[in-house]
Image (cartoon, rainbow over all chains, first blue to last red):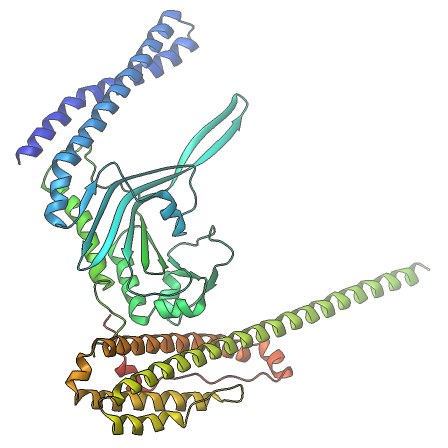
Amino acid sequence: MEIFDRFNKKRRQCLPLVILTIAFAFIGFFGSFFGIIFRKGTIVILSFVCLLLAIVFGVFTSVLYSKLKKQFKDAYIKNLVKEVLPDASYYPQAGIPIDSIYRSHLVKKADRSHVEDLIKGEIDGVSYSTCDVKLEERHVHHTSNGTSTTYVTFFQGRFFEFEFPKSFKGQLLVSETSLHFVPKQFKKIELENVEFNEKFKTYCLDEHSAFYVLTPHLMEALMKLEKTYSGAVSFSFTDSKLCIAIDNRRDSFEIKLTKKLDEEMVHAFRRDLLVIPNMIQLLKLDKNIFYEEV
Amino acid sequence: MFLVQTGVLIGMIIAIVVLIVVIGIIAWYISAMNNLRRLNVKVEEAMSGIDVALTKRYDALTKMLDTTKAYAKYEAETLEKIVKLRKGMNSSTTLEDRKEFASSMDEMQKRMSLVIEQYPQLKADHNFGKLQDAIMDTEEHLQAARRSYNANVRALNSAIISFPSSIVAKRIHMEQRDFFEAEESKKQDVKMEF
């Protein structure tokens, strides 16, 4: 594909900068280390110059890479979204509002958050939105030289919001992992399906609503969905809305400087998009599943 | 003198150990009793959920009957008699009564479906369609209430039969509860498409 050749060429142009950055950083780090140990002032100065150059090249490469990613999303992903999901709109720089994500109670509040690659649309009358989410927690370490702050990622993956065809009171959370941060009003309950209880932890505000929403068939569908997608999957049901969080430590629709753009990558992008209709189909959100046809 | 002191000391140690064991047993007994009572209250709550769902279903079916009357007066009035006899639940209503009430409504719903089949204009009525949806929704609520009740009964029954809480259950005369089973025909009636 012509577009791939173009981007592969741009990607290759960035590679020498990456190599230079790594080389200067390597020389700078070890040079300063040996310079200090053997007390060679010249080596120390030269090493610091190398480190400075590594920083300059690093920043320059990062800017170029960001630009390349943005260009790729505008030139290719936008069209791919239109092709796979005709009624969808794609906003590379936007995401689902972070407060809306927190209201799902599937993730705890982060010290630093980033959302991108928002896709909004409708399939068979079911409106949806999805985006990439990265949430980080600040860790402060106290050492003899002062304090150092690092950010540790505790959630990275895809977040989905679907219209849910059932109206009920309260909120219901189903998660593969324990949700220690849910408000105290949530009660942990067990349903009649032993396999489901072993796989998921269920928290609810109203027990009747939990049984009303989680029909035996929906429980089976959730287990199937969990098997289909890698990563920790969790679900939040609120009145007429279903949120799904998949923590798979992946950043969707991104090109990598070190990886060639090829058909395999296109398949991966396509698969990421097809997750949306697959979920709607698997959970039968497009049908009035709860009523028998009369 | 020394022997006397040692004897007193051993006696005190034994007394303290016995006291700790007795306090432990009492604490466990109270905790087990509270747990059983809590489970029993949950069963009662779930039972009231069934009552609410049954009442809602009754109301929805009655509304549907009223609409059907306009088209099939005689059949609707006959059907009405089936459930009217069973209506009215209170604290003295047993689980069997509830099951019977639910069955009579199932019966009425089945017969009503047959009546509706004979009146295409009734079937096509927009409001009637909404009523049908409402009935299905009340049916869903009833199924949820039934499953919630059964889950709570399962938890209570397993606490009653498990040792050593079975001892406490026997002492406070707590007995195993019956499940609210759905009829096979009912299970088929409410076809969920998952």
